[in-house]
Image (cartoon, rainbow, N blue to C red; front, side):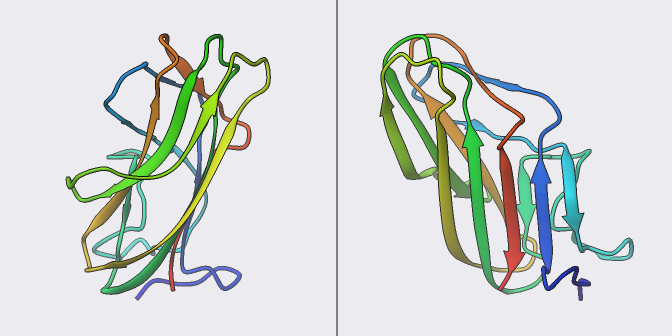
Amino acid sequence: MANTVFGLKGTIATKSAVQSVASSATAAIVTFDLETYDTSGDTEAVKFHSITTNTGRFYAVEDGFYELSATVKFAAIAAAGRVALGYSIDAGADVETVEQVTSATSSTPGLFMKKYLKLSAGQYVTLKALQTSGGAIDIVVAGTEAVFKKM
């Protein structure tokens, strides 16, 4: 059984560097190489998240309900298009949950999503980002974060 920190039984993950997302109909896995918290102990067989291997995956450490909430911020967009944020379970089909049609902007558009999922121990969830501006757009570090916790 995992430990808790301030009532959180899970992980809070962030990024240390921008991540480029190509303009495509195929969503890219959003990776997180830093953690604010991860209550998985060193002896846990399954960790909530790893900062070294498969950094885009969030694992269920036991059967039950989990909350996945994430904010993904994009760099300025040079051309009109859409940005979307979704998720998939294991290697399953992508499920889009939120999207925003954008015009060219110098601001950094951000998307927020919250999902409640019933998972079995060892299953994993990945966040996916998609954009259709015609050129690559970066996911920025500031403001991009994922929280994955056991309910």
